[in-house]
Image 1 (cartoon, rainbow, N blue to C red):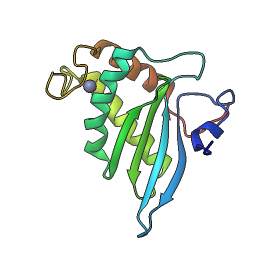
Image 2: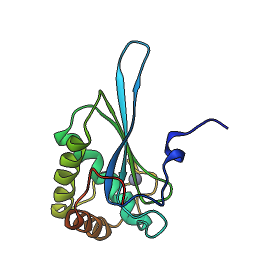
Image 3: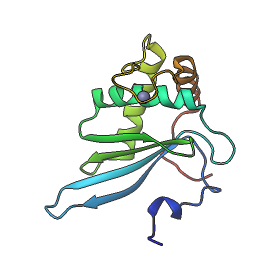
Length: 150
Ligand SMILES: [Zn+2]
């Protein structure tokens, strides 16, 4: 079995919500890519509703790119406790938290889900703007930390 970085994290020792800088990879030509965990829910205690995480995925995709350059991807974790994010260059955790706070505040003001239609989404009926707003307000209230451990 190949060693996977995210499997080396002890999920019983962390305290969500937090942003974790997982690794910085350097390509053959010297380009760097940084990978983050955006962990919103406490592992094995809570997880996001599927419609809400889907809507949050659509919203974070646009809002985070409004204030941060070089974002390659933001994707939901299969366990539904958070998102993965990868970006060009070496990026600080503080920059990601600042970007997330901006994006989550924008979620609260959102009236329409972008790209929630048959052409632009693979399951456009499965969305919950209300659910995404509940998650955003919970995260803003708790405060996303740069400290990972309890
Ligand atoms: Zn979609």
